[in-house]
Length: 565
Image 1 (cartoon, rainbow, N blue to C red):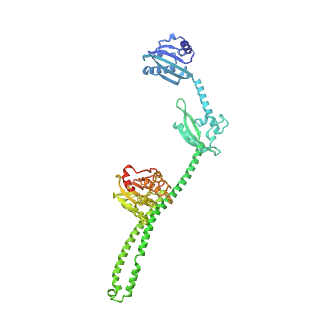
Image 2 (tube, rainbow, N blue to C red):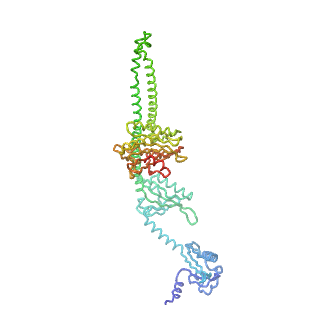
Image 3 (cartoon, helix red, strand yellow):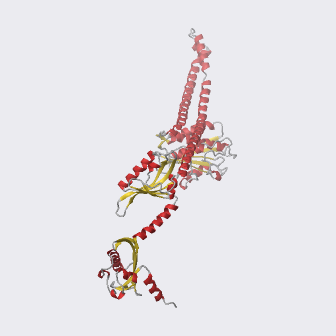
């Protein structure tokens, strides 16, 4: 076994740290020689049993620190530590570090304290700090500088010497920014440093552009702070900066690339809306052509040439007073004129109806084309319209394309409501859905009657629903998440614009367009949900991708399931 008491005794007598122990009444019970030297005492027996305030030989600075630590231990029974406290010892500056620990018995009762403190001369301390500063200034890749009140360099890092293009550190001391940067750049640095010294407010993480006297530029991110002495007086500034020229160049390149991408995106967007306009106008033009064809046929078959013959007959027999009463041709002439008048009146009414339809279709085409102005910031116009009337218009346009096919349209209008909507955009959506349903039915191979069902309902107080369902070819489950994507189509001659633009338009109007299908060959249903009261959207864009595509929500499945069976 080693005698640890011998080791402890020699350590306590040889260490420069001051070590002492006090009892529960804070009376001295033991101390090493270094502590006794502070008390100017050679023998421990002369001070055993004394308290700190009973000794006057110890320096006031150290004594105040020890008294404060012991008082806190007496109150809290917790360890007290102080690091590098600056104080005066024998009229010289020094730094004192101390730690005092409470001592407890095995049963937890306070028994006293054990303290240790060390004293470091100011010159020694500064020497150590200088070593640390020198190591930092030599090795750091950041640019560090210190300036006096006149913004003259008093110390810089080695990296700063290299950055300024100076041969050595000594050549920089006493110079200013005006010796290295152009006048405007240096003047900005100088004014910034004046503000920092006047306001004592630092500048943190600022990106600055540096311009050399030869015009060469660079970029740094910098922080600048006031330089204060121990009494709080500002005697200059100091700062640290990092060169970010490479990052800035990358940022400029990214900005150029982004501008090119935006230009390309805009061109692509304009191409898309142009395709959508052509697609939607084409749908309405079918109805326009039918109206023109019906009007042309009605006028052609109006029998006007027979009226001309009747007029010639009357003119030829104008001098025969008995022509209408005795001549066989004259007797039937009044009935012929009445029948012709009725036929012309019927034809006139039919043509007027077709002209009204034609006018409404032309108005819709005009609105579709004018929608391109939304890309210039024009807000869509909303109006209060009858939902039934709007759906009837869409059905009528759709029926024009069905006249030559064996597909029928059924209407199931559960509610009759008015809504504040952009009627032309809603009409555009519905015409697309009916047109797609017609194609789906025509492509179906089954022998059942091919039918499109258009339903109006109101699932909630705030929304109305228009469902377009069919018993056509249906939709493969794997395509349900793709049918609304731009350019996606399963038709040989399809362009993939209709459903994409319709889904985007529905989203812009504050609603949704949802597709569901039991599977291929089993029909499909498209449900358009729109708010009854229009809520303007500031971020609406026709080209925004629709990602919320899926099956009908549970509360709507009942309305969708029947027509698709």
